[in-house]
Image 1 (cartoon, one colour):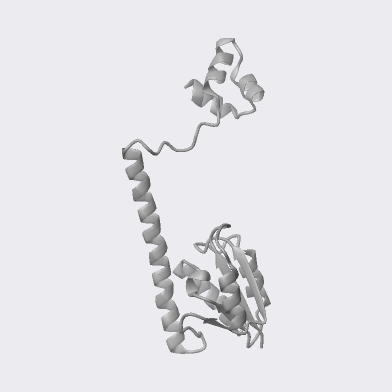
Image 2 (tube, helix red, strand yellow):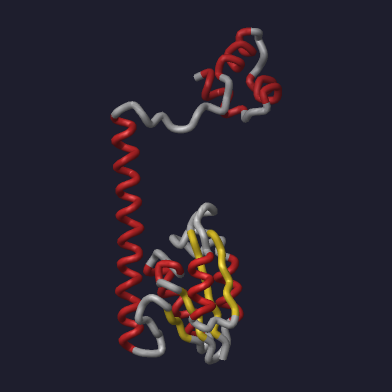
Length: 179
């Protein structure tokens, strides 16, 4: 039986050390970690490596369920993958052990709350952007195309394809500027 730890943070400026230390202290034989969003499994190579490595009787250990997934669908998929391998899931900071009915029920509740928290954060972000737009503060990203250069070349009689080639931009961008 091997206990494999998995640590995750969302952004590159966050620190994995606290989770890694907690997982080692909990007796993990191996700790894998990555800096990726937990809202999807896409692009989480370390998680996939851990899931592929699990064998009968192994334990996948995390510090908290939200480190594993922030979507109830993804969490359930991960739990099914762990179970299909004959392994179990445990968390150091939460009473979760998928080898028991109570642990599985608590896991599902925590998964719902993790997804709820993500959805609340997204709603607040969208509200903030809408408010900033209404106040004229949020203008989006800066234009990457020099509209004056496009118009000047057009005024010189240069065709859209040549303008695009000269300015190293797409033809559709030229047409958009020229209206």
